[in-house]
Image (cartoon, rainbow, N blue to C red; front, top):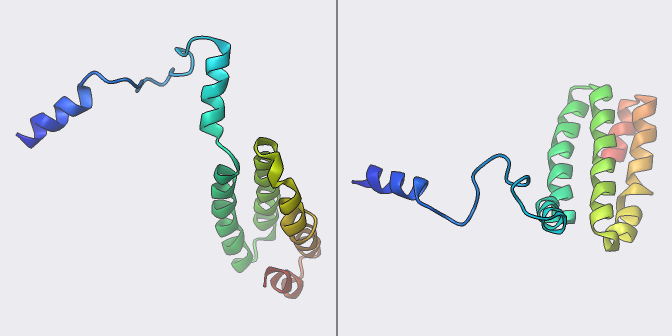
Length: 123
């Protein structure tokens, strides 16, 4: 009985699309742009990516894989810049707390490939 109920819920008519071309089926450019904007969201989505990349960055440092660490560090910057583009009010804080400070000093430490400098910057 539960299986039948579950199947009914899965395949019942609903108001949303489960197709992969949901955007193409959206009528009108304005509606498409609004749908895209909803999907990109604001700065919060950028911070999800920052968190993911920061975790990878940390383990790359632990493994002394400075090439991967630098790659992730640059992607963290790019994620924040993309978030700023979506939410310009976050620009000043992002620059003051990361882009103009920690990002630059850690980039320099990574360029030096000095384990001591890198971990000093990390902490």
